[in-house]
Image (cartoon, rainbow, N blue to C red; front, side, top):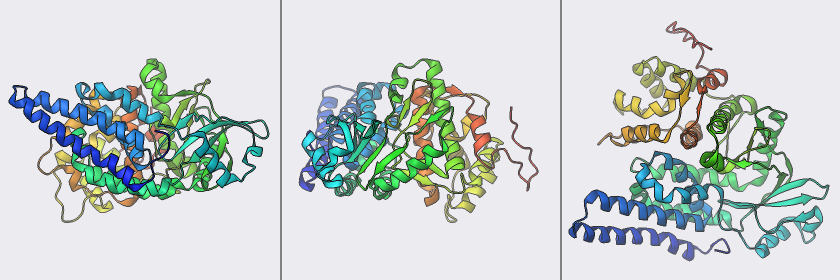
Length: 447
């Protein structure tokens, strides 16, 4: 894989091969069942092989396919260990890397974006990328003033490739259902597609990154590399060395994983209040732990602009949920548009669906784990035939908030982190610690 495959025919062929391969494995499984293998064993074999093929192709394609692969890799924590085991290494790799572009292609982009004299901006430039992701890759360089920098370069034709990928991937809903039966892949693709245009604009990303860097300057918990220069397809920012969060997940001590989990939650909940924006791409590849223990946050291409901070309703309904008043929670969700007037939702089914998002805020200290998430996922996916997920409407103002919270829970479960997460909600989320003036209920205690 030496270049981004931009021709629609070539990319479609790779994606089209996925359902064909699945059909072949299904037929093979039917033959094995005739030969005496149990349906459960055959289903597991199909799932494992399907996953292996899906993530291999997604990683090679980059673009929208790679971006979807990264999104799905977050949810591996919800899969049973006997299924996820054979390809967990592949998923982790997807979070950090993709095949790099050749040097000649990189140089061509730099000439187009910075001019024939682009090298004059740098004392040195490493042709081999240090990271490659869905729409661009990062090169280490030394700026003309001697600072070590990260140079983010957008793949040529990335925008056209992304839109083509999403069109093709939308046809593969049944295939992805083999991996995650409870995942509404169409909604995931729709939300990702809406953010593509924003993520392709590096000037917009530079503006967001600079705002975060200013707010978190000299912060004891976080380090945000500031932007040095940018145009539409090249972004130059300060270089930061550190340990990837994916390595903390696999090799970190319990203390390191607990601290990283708490930092992640603190960053997510404090950013809207401090910067008026929410970092909306919380997969492990975007986080580093630097030598002094601070968490470095990268990639601000996807942000949710929240000038007024978190909606107060979010904190209020979380508090009411913890008090056990599902009737008020349901009415609040109806008032906000999560439940449309003509839709009836089972209260217990809704409680089970919301539990993973709310349960960690009900106790002073909480432990996230793969087992806990697997149990929560099983509860939701077992609700038939009227799965509550399909009965809920997600207002546009909450789309990215939901994405961040769902993905963040996945990362916390990968970390297996234990910490006082409730304190972060009390501190940063309006409405959670406030008394309900209408009911006179007590304010949440801070301890």
